Image 1 (tube, rainbow, N blue to C red):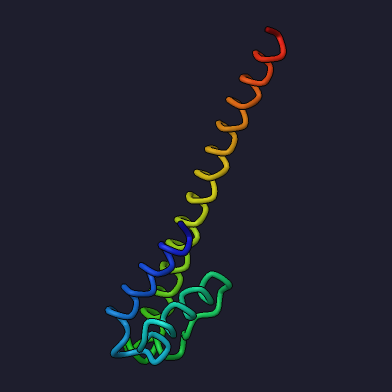
Image 2 (image 1 turned 135 degrees about the vertical axis):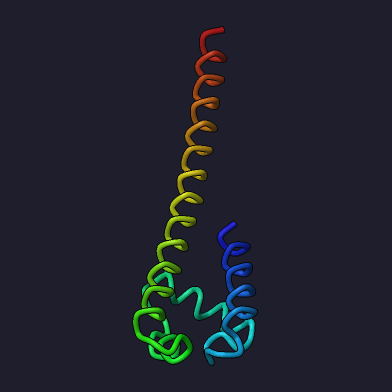
Length: 100
């Protein structure tokens, strides 16, 4: 699921920013830059030049990282809740089998 999300994000960044920012010019470099964004390294200088002001480039990068982290946290929570439900049903089934 994370790989699908990263591929979609890389493709959309390539389409939106590929002409302006070198790190998003091809799909492979866009995927790598998107994965690096999760660690907090974004091409701030190129984004500043793209938006012609430091405030818009920084704002875009900040909002972008927050949206990425929000989606990743929800993906992880969904996986943990599904795993918890699975373990709960497995424990109930094993307890019922032991009692019979």
